Image 1: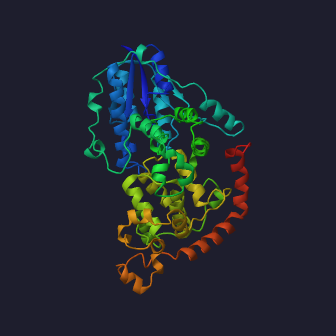
Image 2: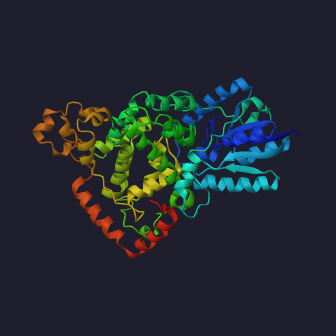
Image 3: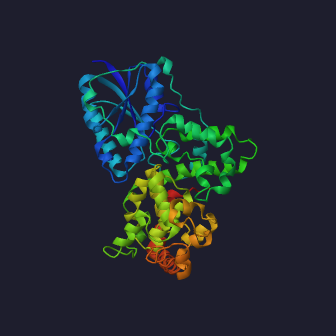
Length: 487
């Protein structure tokens, strides 16, 4: 049998700064490149066709880059165990190479099963660190220093000129036939692949990034001013390290310093939150602060209509609905508006965060499990240690969409409304409603909640709960595990 090396791509869809690929090539054996559309992930409720379209586009881009080297990534539809069993029947696998995946519980379980399978087959599996996230970390002592050291370390650049590639037909029966919605671009949604990832990063420095620090909280202006790198980082089209080092090369660019400081801090947060999830992945299923296990959320069937209204952007609260409709169409929303959506769900509607967490995961094109769960819980106020932020959606609209540009784009029925009325149409008089063509039975005259009353109730509920003994006891454990001593 031919002795081969296998590189298993997951959320690292690039061929630059890729240590598994570099090490496999250096091994000096024929290299087989794999990506698996695994049935259990295709069926997972966190994912939507927008994610798989982005992955497919990324793989097509990579295979275009690999074509001059007479190789490609084999894109298959099968469980990993079945693929490795098949390969082991045809080849002697000297080693499997991949990045560590900080994913959902089901991918963690998959990896444990694969480790057992490969051990039984006497095949080594080398997994390399993802970004600056340290597997199994139980303390944040010196974590910030390690982050800096990693981000400033040399890139792991594969030497394609010395590579030997394996081409085989033994996997042909597993080759995936993509559905049309993967192949065709979706207007308004970012397209996957390292080529467009780098184009997006470079475009940031052509001028639009100068206003990043000033427009980051504005739902409309942020769409151009923000880096828009999040899906390319989430799916690994760009590594965090090469992004960070590229930012540093522009550090002296005139007019960019404030924006670059803000951007670097967010690259740091990226790893910080993923590290939280890596260190306590059970937060996928329960509050990280277990003192909130019995928090008095409303329950079914009382919440049915409110939950569906929130999911579909039909709450009657303009900014909430505009944000949800924007997400449904484009897969992107800036950080503050994401936080506001979670706040409305968990605070104003008093609905358990777990009933909305997969919905937003499906909508976020940049869904990253390690960021999504810690952030969702922080915004829901169930960590016990973070400042409770109850985002009033009417005030947020007044402050960050004062001219109603964002609201009117996604709620075209408000095109003729003055901005001040578009922020809170429930205050329209009967005469004003008639004047501006707002139907008397419009949801926007009768939103599902009174925002101010709901805010007051949430504030009382959350602050009183944060004082409970069991919540405070958990805070001590959380601080020791997740907070950097230097912070």
